[in-house]
Amino acid sequence: MNIRIGTRGSKLALWQAEYVKTRIEKAGHTAEIKIIQTKGDKILDVAISKIGSKGVFTEEIEAQLEDGNIDIAVHSAKDMQSELPQGFDLIAFTEREKVNDVLVSHKDSIDINDKDNPIVIGTSSTRRIATLKHFYPHIKTVDIRGNLQTRIRKMEEGLCDAILLAYAGVHRMEYDDKIKLELSTQEFIPAVGQGSVAIEVHESIEDDKKQMLRFALNHRNTEYCLRAERAYLRHLQGGCSIPVFGLATLNSNSIEMEAGIISLDGQERISMKLTDETSRAEELGTLIARQILKKGGDKVLKEIREQLSED
Ligand SMILES: NCc1[nH]cc(CCC(=O)O)c1CC(=O)O
Image 1 (cartoon, rainbow, N blue to C red):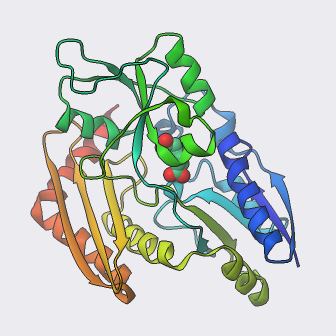
Image 2 (image 1 turned 90 degrees about the vertical axis):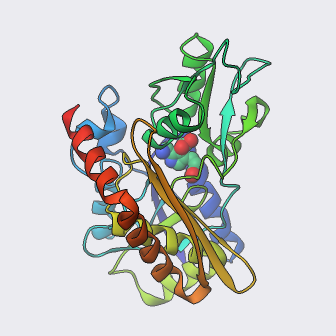
């Protein structure tokens, strides 16, 4: 079989597409990569949250899937909305990379606890900003956009002392030597889906192709975790600009998930941990979401939505 892979053209997106291509080839098939420009790639000077519509990085790719010009689209799982447009589905999740966030810097000494000379951290993620405000209130943050290469340049030009990023992306772009600190997943619980690559298809895909792709690309344990986390996100209706977090892990026969929400100012952080049978991954995600809402998450979520729509 030959699989046509659609992807954005960023370096990280291309790494993901190449990775998927190699896996398909190892399973004895062929694959080719088609780069697709999205609205999000063209508009670089406006905050994503202000471009407006959902799916600024996916619309054009989904159009190609629907028209049958490509068979699959490859995305960072964490960038995928919790509910896809009608007719689209995620059919595989690749084995998850280490899930931590890390501090990347060109400087030798980076001390996140130094209150006398607090470091300035570059990040645009509401989850990371709020988490820093909660656990490290002395730290200042500065907005930083662009791909990893651009962010590192801006940091080196003096915008900030360090940038806060997902280990997975830093490692894939081979900047490991700039990692100065690994944040604990107890404080910095990652974004839903962080570290895994998701395979999207349109429902018109042939069954045998779909099965081959699942066999070649899907990592079962990762899939259970991602299904739990995405169910959590779906129930909260959290988009990528809302500081919610969730991390599921598998033990021998059970799935454990810790998830929560944090107010934009970092003051209120609601989180909880629950365990269930692996086969009940989605129910677990939904249950945690319900409990979080009940524990005050509904109020925090409402506040966040109001604050985000004001700016
Ligand atoms: N939101 C951007 C994004 N989407 C995926 C990754 C890389 C790692 C991953 O796939 O989880 C990143 C960068 C980051 O958050 O540091």
